[in-house]
Image 1 (cartoon, rainbow, N blue to C red):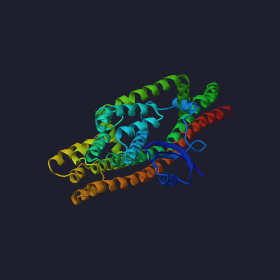
Image 2 (cartoon, helix red, strand yellow):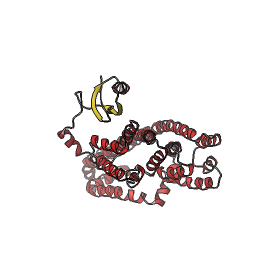
Image 3 (cartoon, rainbow, N blue to C red):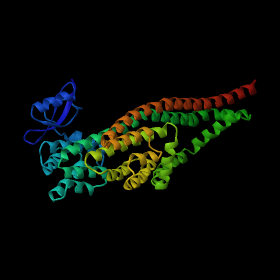
Length: 413
């Protein structure tokens, strides 16, 4: 049976860690609860042995070479989930933070928690402590925490926040995972072409020169390109590095980014995928804010900052303005013409029936599934297109060389 590493709160309020064998994670949860412990985190174990988990110096030291220097999204989700568990177990906030510091093995997380703990002990609210660390905690995160503090249910609110963050992460990861194969395919194509041009074509170039006959146009072009790559490879590498440095800075300009975002939305297949990803994130984030007592106006202002596409985010400014004028939410959103009709109609129904939060959650679920379908449809078109392009490119290079060889054969004949 697989082994699972767990972290749980004991009846005495301490954090216990260890490893157990079980058929699945649900069985681990049941066994821990039978012992009176509240699970904080359960994951598959990478090592052998049962009992308490000890921190080894050698293994930990090796990991530090590759450890991130900043708090990652995964670490933030885990931290949120664990803090929710501790607060729901009845621990006071400063004690819960102290316990998380004790079990943390990532230096950036430890440093972050220590600063938050000191602020809380100094009399600041948790939301205030988080707001001063805006490089880690978004405005969305801080407002959710502030709403939880106001309602006296911080533990439950943090649990729902962690679920929202996990769902958004799953959507992003599904898209990234789907793009791994096309990325590898493009890399293989680039390497194959470079190898042909730099190492294979020069083998024929000297022979063609000795023949003293004018080469076919296709052969001459391939020989010229191969010669360029062989002599100026360093300039090509320098150009790629310069482009990698310049492009992010260029895209950081709002006007440029907005033009690129607008262009993305008009692309076939890609535009549909981008829209669905943004709508799923928009609906889930707004539903979470409304569920925790944030007003619709404030929620829209926060959601606008969390969206990745500037055009879709900018359209919300007009929606917010019309909402302030008392013209509602669903109709102005539909009038932008940028959001899918299904989503806007569902939101309009939710608004009219007084179940906007519930309908937003349904919209998010619908478009999460739509994203999966759109990704499959996109890959169904992209992968054959890449394979065909690779075949045509490499086949064209080989055919151009064969044209030159055939011309030499006619000359000899």
